[in-house]
Length: 140
Image (cartoon, rainbow, N blue to C red; front, side, top):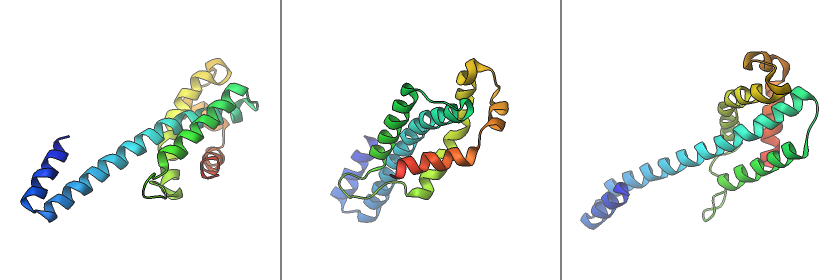
């Protein structure tokens, strides 16, 4: 809110350069918020993909959670008015990589009723395969 008031003041004064700086700051804040939300859903997506791979099975609940996470990520990433996306595939991949460790930590509590520590679970699953699958599901 503070930034909007400052922007209004700068526009009234005719300070276009200062106004553009505020607009860029607002854009960056918005993109950062979108990335954080995408990462939150990426953790859920990766958690269930990790569980599927580690336990070599799936449940309807996991599949629904995967689909819902993918839909949320796709929706968050879509630029509504301008068209296109906020994060191109390379940046989406980086967001998935950022979410991966948290997903492993959470999956370690659930895979085979918490049988594995996170580092043990990491050895059981193929990180690259899981990240590739997640990205492909999002980009469909």
